Image (cartoon, rainbow, N blue to C red; front, top):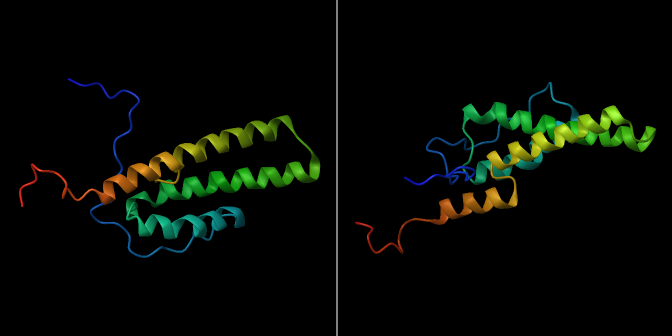
Length: 127
């Protein structure tokens, strides 16, 4: 038995992916909506997300938006210990969620490898 502790499974295109990007939720901040509009075309093109995944994508966009909002506070008011901790946690959350949806370089490579592998170079592939 092989242990895959710490190894993430390959991302693959979903069986029922969204084919059209839904509008960003109206309740999102401007920063979160901007991130939604930035990433959604890529997620649709890579056939990564389904309707069931939208909450996770919303959470990612909210986390990225929060990072940007706190950075704006730093520019006007200077560093604040409490906000710094909040920003750090939001960055960590955004990074973790980005990996879930193929939005980081490593996870993007996993998506590309899975999408490109049609088995044609596999001599054991039955046709």
